[in-house]
Image 1 (cartoon, rainbow, N blue to C red):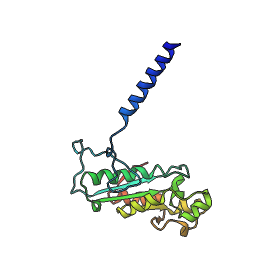
Image 2: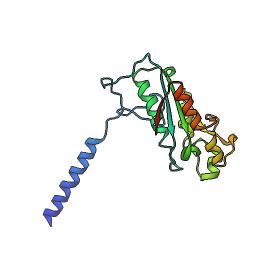
Image 3: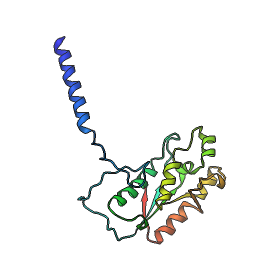
Image 4: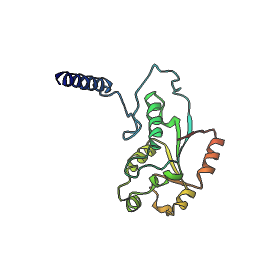
Length: 183
């Protein structure tokens, strides 16, 4: 009986100490621009550092449905990209990023009143969308998806542009030299 308790105590001690070792120190994860999403760890000696003089053009295709009471996971990599590039010294005006929202992710673009009416909770994406826009990211929703969900265009958050379609927007932006980043 004593051996069993001793073994259990040792195992718990090992578990707790390994969990404590795994916890990063304060300041390890940072959010230099987008404060509510996209935490990143600076790595100034890492390979493939961005050139501070290059203009980066990327369209992030955000399409998956998420839990309605949590921020959308598809916006997370967009926020992280802004934070990573800014942390590496790339000026925000060199980031030509477009978050193109369509499909199951379309509801994240609703204003708070209509989101709350449909899902019974405040829209948890509004803060991140506002921060993205403030950082120069164009947040765009597919007008066809908005119509397909039966939403009115004036229900869309004012920080979000309504495009003709995600399909045409993606094609146009790629034609203009944007890299496509499907999420």
